[in-house]
Length: 106
Image (cartoon, rainbow, N blue to C red; front, side, top):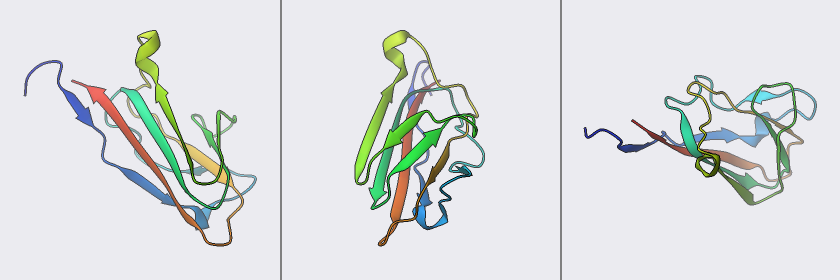
């Protein structure tokens, strides 16, 4: 593969039925396989969620059926390799999934 190629991460999904309003649940157990410069978080559920990058502090809020795109490349930065994402929230009436996609450079 050519140097400076872009690779997508494998799409991760997490069923919001497993959400806890107080404690964080890990979304991607093994972390990202590369240092991502773009990450997209899609909340395809009827539950508002809070995302954390360390499992302790609140970092992102995503309302129901909304998404957030994080472009770290603007500041010439990346989300470190093996970073795990965590979510917490109240389980909604109908449920749904949280989807995570990302892109990294090799």
